[in-house]
Length: 104
Image (cartoon, rainbow, N blue to C red; front, side, top):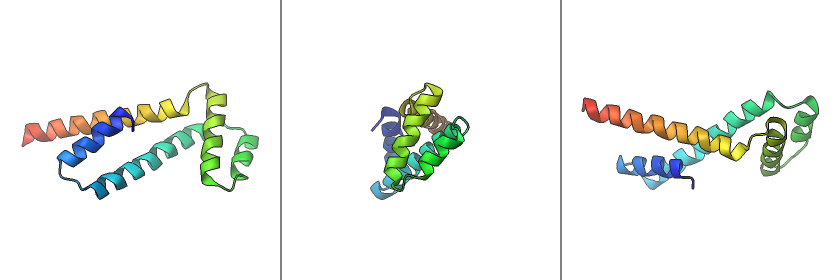
């Protein structure tokens, strides 16, 4: 688990969220993060790229292909892009908690 995600899950546990709630949050966060990458990727993919992805029946294989094509088309590592998104989210969550503590 990446450090920013660990920070978020630790904070959620400290705030009293159950393991099940933290797991659900983490799962949803990963889906949202991949969706963000997917949206960015679609702007760089050719029609042929999209057709290749659509022809892959297994989601895991499609995700792998999307990441591969994203790196080819943008020159950026998709995993690093997703980590940056999670890190930014972690910073915003920490800021929100700090603001909440100041007003409490």
